[in-house]
Length: 240
Ligand SMILES: [Cu+2]
Image 1: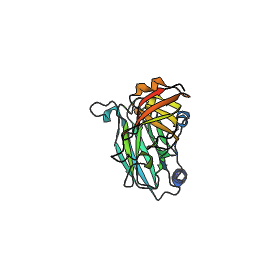
Image 2: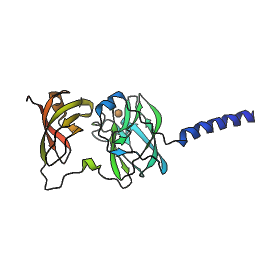
Image 3: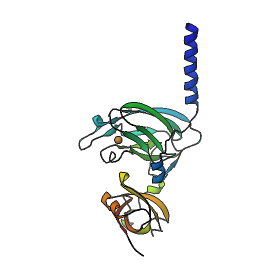
Image 4: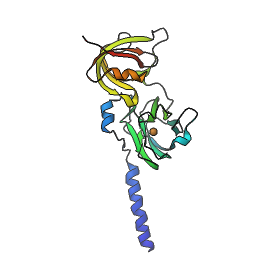
């Protein structure tokens, strides 16, 4: 009996060792996420130098005034080039999905209802602050968002605010690649925005989100970007 028990224990140990040995990145990019073409701001390091486990909870009971759902904690920290295991408990009967869209590869931990799940990712080897949110439609707006501070933290290079003397609003033209109402975003393949950004395909938050109703993929558009907020604040299709 004792021998059987020992065998059972070692079998478990082997399984754990196999799961724990790699720094395999268990991101689950679904088809929608690929479609969204999130702008990647951070590339995971190849050889993590450490490991940490972060326990989080999500649900209505963590919401503050004016919110419906939230994650707790809302600010999490990790070292640069570290393997991180997120252990997340969904205390709600509804669907939630923790997503770190800035990571490369992207990280998502999805629940269909109550339960505890864990997944690992590797932080980039840079001081950077990345947003996380619930990927279920409208949940971010309802309070499910937070930040991961890697190392000393910092703005991703592509999101640096322009110098104070720079003007606030910039006009751009481009073609709509994708409309993402659930994230209030568009992906736009735009021409050079003089003084602001080179020509590139990029995803932007659009405020108000109702502007998204004016456009569809393939449309040529004119848009106005608030350079400090990195948001599109006006958007319209145009014929030319
Ligand atoms: Cu959610």
